[in-house]
Length: 94
Image (cartoon, rainbow, N blue to C red; front, side, top):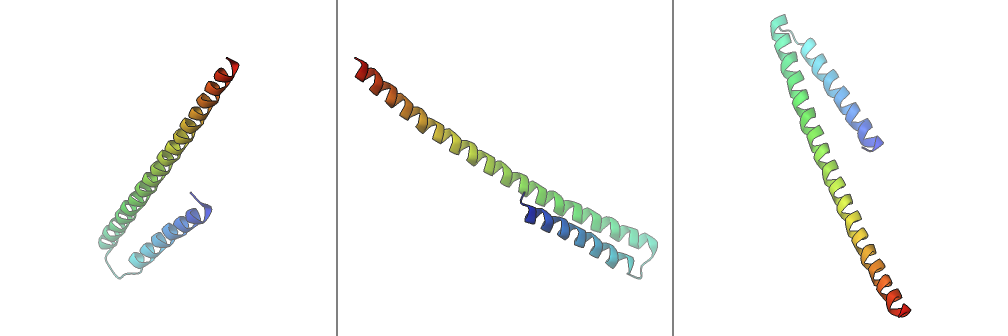
């Protein structure tokens, strides 16, 4: 994860938590209602984080798969070049 992306994500999460808590705690509700709201907000934040994390993991998997395929392709091309050079050397040695 890039540093700026990580910093943004940490700031976003911190702001979301602080905003949710401030909004719920400053509301003129009964304690049981406030606890219910805090629980609901916490669950929503957790769900959002899981979705974001899952998306980042999927992006990482795609990147790794693309990189692996790229390396395999380059290796295959190099292998073919080596085989061609070996064939030329054998041919020249005869």
